[in-house]
Image 1: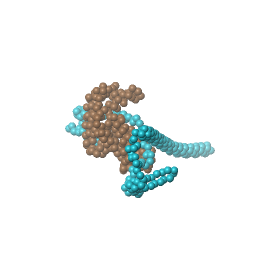
Image 2: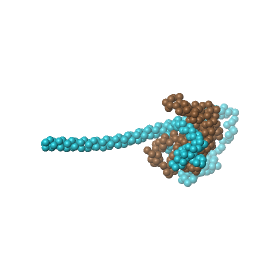
Image 3: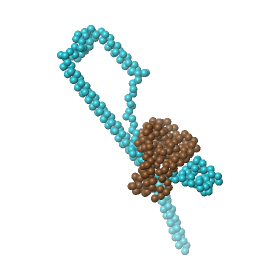
Image 4: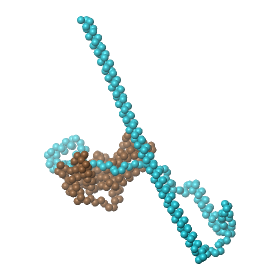
Length: 238
Length: 194
């Protein structure tokens, strides 16, 4: 037989995807062709080496938890009634501030009452007056106080943020634990259902067996009675 | 419970069903990625991304009976992406493997109860994974799917969108490459005889 062991044939033969007729023919050829036989055995050896590999179990199991809820949506101006109202309000406030500043409007709040007046006079001394040497000490102390206030506020913000993050992590962990608990409960329910169905099947089988045995005993009893009757009638005849 | 039933339950809003699917397929997909990439961390990452993608697209899967093929397609694509992303290519310390190769293969044939053999068996897995890294990606993918997932050449061809003949050809050249590596590492049938 001519050597026609193609790559495809070889792979089909190695992995048993070859038709029966082709396989028989190829095996007959391999008996008479040492070159092809050698090639097959070399490939088979590589396959056997690969077969020695085993599956690894991943170090950690993946578990998906549902989202905490709808995420914050980015506010869209387009097509939103609330957006239009907000925009109009902001523009109105801006215009009003501009007009009032032109007319030197002064707005103040004291003893629980708001008051406003037009034509307020500007500070005669001007902003540079605050920087005069006699006021320098006061300004420094004010700056120090502002700085302390700012540091205090930043610390407060950091503390709040940290607290919020902790709360969030706590909530995620709690949700995760609840989910795991729920899954475990469900798995146990499934196992329970399986056991129950197995138990029911077994009980049905046992009942069937009992019925058959009862019937057998009844038939055997009847046959014994018949035999006894026959023996008695035989004895009487004698 | 079958995969199809789990998918239906998940699509009905039951997240636990999805997790059951994950646990059922995780080891299989992780091992595919591990053999393809040769790196545990990368394999874990790819495995995780596979399930995130599955979670997002499971409702697109029309035929639930083709879940296995679909999952392998996703993990294969992600493995290819991961390989492209890695700027620093993994280099195999050949000397180290040559030193330990024969020992690892012999140990794989020891009794399963032998604790010493267990450590060597891990080395053998590493050795085989490293050998796989030395052949071209496309041949590697076919070998993993055929050798470790037991797919038919027709299924591999469908999964990789190639002809059946090309799949067999890649398998052939992949095995030729592996034989060369095994020869270089002096791993043969005789070394397996204890």
